[in-house]
Length: 387
Image (cartoon, rainbow, N blue to C red; front, side):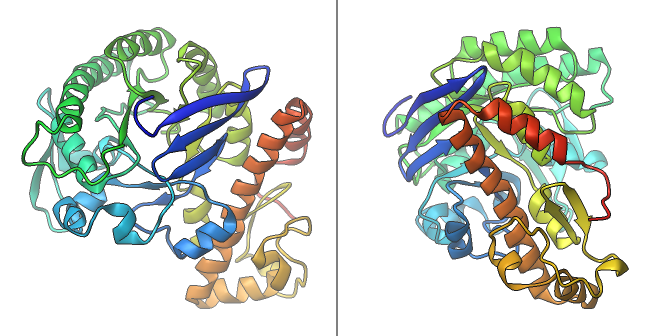
């Protein structure tokens, strides 16, 4: 990997990897989970909260930051790190998934994606080149190539069209990234000269399309690689099958990123299949809706049975929320709509995720990952609990 970037696998257990990714804004111990800061902030938390929780890297949303406050404005402020007061690494997505989520508000062709803003209905065009330019102005440490995400219900023919278009876009995005990195794009002020670019493997739920996408993406040559287009409605077993097929074929000396996944058991299962980086809105979004994670599964803190429950959310958890507050109090905050509810719930859920990743890293170091995995999967349930 170029410039200030480096990645090395330090320990292995089966396909699971313990490693270290070095970026211009500091190291990331892997496997790692990236909290999602959609509009330049992880909802309900401050950067200090994230540091205290042990977050090593966060994710910014290209689509939302482009619309508001605008990548030009952020560049004039010195880049995204300076603008949001976060000195650790940042990964930015390309906007592909957000455009996919717009449904009838967007139209995709070989040139790019034409869409109407969900904010004011204004028209915009996002191309592979423009996605590169926006992320260069934002100055993230890791930028993603622009891709087309097919829905889980896509037919094989539809998934093939999206996959082949993603490859064509990837060639254009990589060429533009080279121009920007070389300083040959006069209209683009790159705020982080050390930025790298990851390619994305698409192909829906069809293994042969995934293999073709991986082969084509590797042939273009990116700094590292991600698996996209999963966790969009397909069963978890399908996600695990695709990840298990794709990940081993990605370069061993580069980090492997699974985009947008998922529940805690997803992290455990996909680490076992060779994934190093994860992101998902689930722990923060669900926290704001009252779903809190425990070692045995999620609970809905709004449930009436917690009205006089003096226990912490999880008696084995050492987070600030569990050390200081009862389920009864957290239910009260949620039911009356106090802003503090979102903060305390998010602190707990992100601690749960980041602590799980820390335990995974330590287990791989000591050759105990499979033992941890089996214990976790025996105790954790996705279904509603009577905990």
